[in-house]
Picture (tube, rainbow, N blue to C red):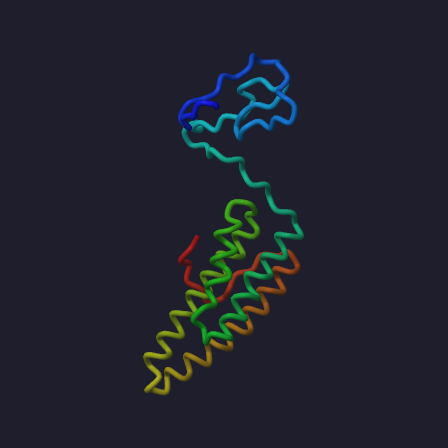
Length: 173
């Protein structure tokens, strides 16, 4: 009978270059036959100010254009479907996911996010003042502005042009 083995003890390893027994599979993290023992890349701490992971590649111009259009169209669709409460979500997600990979996309996503937050404030003010006639006017004006400016921004993004919303508070710069 063989002696019970303690899981914490290691079996002696054959010297480097000795072929493994027939049908032997190396354990995870162990070098296979013919590899030096420490061929794994080391992921130690990175120098100060540098990320410890590889940088993400920049987006292609067609991907930039697609995501820029989606930041405006997605905001417009969710604004119309949710009565102005969720229009800020698509540009925020697009900006956070693709931040730093394209200045063009950063600009469009931040511009759309700023406009949607401004619209959200206008909708809240309109709802608060709904008992007066001014509240109805604010809601209608915000709805028309969201529709017209959202379409104009989407068209500008599809042409790969910059766009600035006419009435927008710059929360994110």
